[in-house]
Amino acid sequence: MQPALIAVDWGTTALRGALLAADGTLLASHAAPRGLLSVAPGGWAAAFDAEFGAWRAAHPQLPCLLAGMVGSRQGWAEAPYCACPAGLADVAQRLHWVQPGQVAIVPGLSTLADGVPDVLRGEETQVFGALQALGADAAGDLSIVLPGTHSKWVQVRAGRITGFATHMTGECYALLRQQSILARMLPADDGELDGAAFDAGVARAFGAGGLLHHLFSVRTLALFDQAGGPALASRLSGLLIGEELRAQALAPGAAVVVLGSAALALRYQRALALRGHAVQVLSADTGWLGLLAIAGAAGLLSAKGQAGAAPAGTLSA
Image: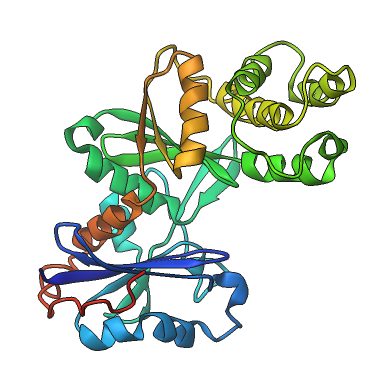
């Protein structure tokens, strides 16, 4: 099978790459702990060649698309955000070429809510990939959540991203878990999810009082020996994810697509189901389909997708 695209997700702490056929088949993959934080200023081209030089030497005509923090102000080059609403064609027109005709950075998206800007980089490729995976099911309005350090709630209408909102849920969990007074009540490791404690946290988040009040219950339940250990960590997780859901004001029974790692997706799926929402879970690897779709919209595949076969074992991981 012929390779058509070198796709790269280059984030803050790590990178992942995929050698893709035109139909989305993964021919080879590569991952390394070589993110933005480990690349010296001016060293991006050399870092890229060190990680993907073998693929490029074997397939010199293949286009390469990069997504994620590689396009930030601290990255290889700042790729200006594409404003919402935005579809595949809009993003494809705004590709930022760092090696003209060969290597380009996907721009990321921006939106405004009540005059306040919000941004994302990299998640747009996962959303566009999810739309490819969903096919006809993506024709209408969709709510998509991408859980993580900074969770993204993305609204899609007729295949275009109309807006999104960022929630610092994962980062707040880490800060509370490690640096607040609550940390003294929690075990060193989270352990397995305590379903009942998590559910109680989600339910509490929707009750009167507000998050700042509800968080203190993690401490008082421990003080009165009503909960401890992993149950407290699970309750804290439920409180924060519950607050994130509460902020969405989803219509009763509204369907939600969850894109993310299995462990996080399970928590969001559980919390959404508790609130009566239908949930469909897709892998975060849909980002490869998204990058392929962007390349197609930019007209990069038809002329350059006929290079030689993937070198067996090259840079595979």
